[in-house]
Image (cartoon, rainbow, N blue to C red; front, side, top):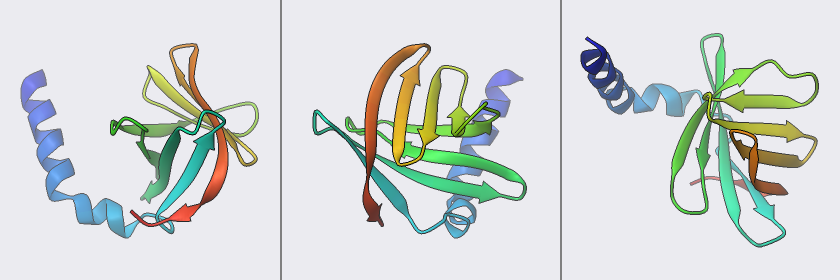
Length: 109
């Protein structure tokens, strides 16, 4: 049953790409670390849910859901967390910092 749900979810994501693209706000925002690595973040609002589409410097993609935070905005999938505060963003894997950077500009990918 679990495999069937995962398969259906994947099919829904692939067939519903336009649904998500139609609800994106102004494309992707670029964040750059002091080491020169970049991540690209797109904010998605679908019905009442907010999430992010994150493209990492190595080509990996993450989809993170909005979660409550004491300050700033935080998105997570249980393992990875993306925390925004002002123009700064920090990406965590569990409690380990993978990326810290600041906003460069807005781009369409």
